[in-house]
Image 1 (cartoon, rainbow, N blue to C red):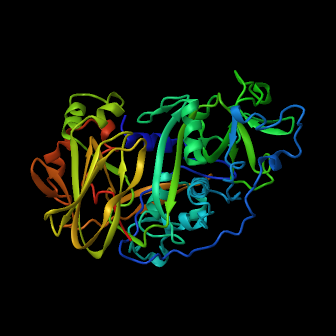
Image 2: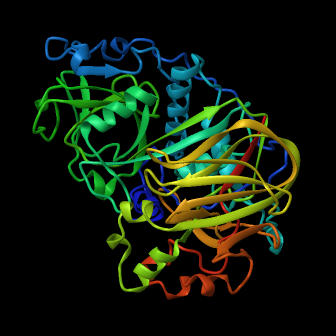
Amino acid sequence: MLSSNFKRTAAAFLVIANAFSVFGLTACSKTEPESETKAKVTHETTAVPVKNADELFAGCDKEYFVPFKDPSRSYCTINDGLGTTLWSQGMGGCYSYSAVSTMQSGYLKTNGELPDINPVDIINRIYESVDTKDGKEPQYKEEKYYIRNVSALDLGGDIYRVAGSMCADPLNGYLISEANVFGSYKTSVNGAPELSEDDVKNIIRKRGAVSLAIHYSKDCTYTGGFYTQNHPDNVKDANHVATIVGWDDDFPADAFNIPASRNGAWLVQNSFGDFWGNSGFYWISYDTPIPEFNNCSVTREYSSALSYGRYPEKALLSSDIVEKAADGNSSSGISIEDIAGSKEVTAATVYDHKGKIGAIGFWTAVPDQPYTIEILDGRFGNVLASKSGKFEHMGYHTVKLDTPLKVKEFTVVIKVAGELLFEGEPAEMNVHTLFQVFPAHYEAKTEPGRSFVKVGEEWVDVTDPALKTRLGIDKLPQDFVRTTFSVTPGDPCITVLFI
């Protein structure tokens, strides 16, 4: 149950969508470090967020149902002052629109301000069109995802792409501080914690709105003016990402096209504009299984950041997990607990950059995965700072140093139990829209002498062709191939944030 498997399993639900959106490409992407933000910044131009949820249901039958009547059995982020921009997306990009909604909701909760972040800017950071006219060889100048003959706005993506696009290049001054992958609900997904109804509610109360994977149109209906959905097969055909902003335990079970087994529903904000559903929102029954919940958080605490491996496309497994897999265990036979309780995987990257470090960002592969961060002087010199701990949820996290650290040349060492995420290597891929498949290219530019993996007591360069054999990766069974690297893991996914 490796998180990288969960990433691809969850993304598989989001490959082809509908006339409104196309989602779920597991894209590789990375932009160059030590550079100013190059993407154009477009400020949001949408209407002021809804301030009271009652506005959404003005035309509904209040004798049939009154939303959020009992505060002890319901909650809405909008009524808590956390309403966010109601987007009207184009053909694709729902993953980015929903991610921004969670950024805005969480930032409002902690800072009282609505971040000015446009989802289109994120999409344009992930993808770039490449010129192939006149028989020219394509030029891959940066580390990112290159597309041909298709608009980036028509393509899919995921939380991993969103986090990579903002972890090291501020967008309107904002950097990603967290990208949590919480798990699944009423279904088992390989590598995902299974959440209860109370788990989901507690996450929303604590963090604000969260994204969910859903089929936007199956088994929908209007009842009493309320637009609703109860889709028992959602795990099989989820094709869209939307945003849960609240719930009501008393929402009627008979309000759905497929009657629910009990009362209760999630209030979901979509990205199809205010003419869709109930002013852009609708209700999903508690009965509907959800294969993934996640959210993103942003910060303005840091002036700049540096990362050589921003997108977690590959993973390195600990020696004991490799041995267990080589003995015939499939990925489904290795649990989240196995990963969190296994030996350490250790990697390092050397930087030549003057500044004052305020935090280190990196990915955890499973919940409660122990980690240790060390910042060394120069190339593998003395330890200047160290932090250890674990996170409740898997995903991308930033760890603040106790005291900001002035550096020039330095090494960041990451130690985690079981599985460590890397950027991977250049690859030819396909990208999907509603109607077509297009060729694409992921460009990675790992350099010798920059990143290393610890094998026993020796630091081995990630570009060493013998690394895979030394780690025993080439002995893994076929179902681990996509989890681990095939030639080089590239740079580890580490971000250095400067104040």
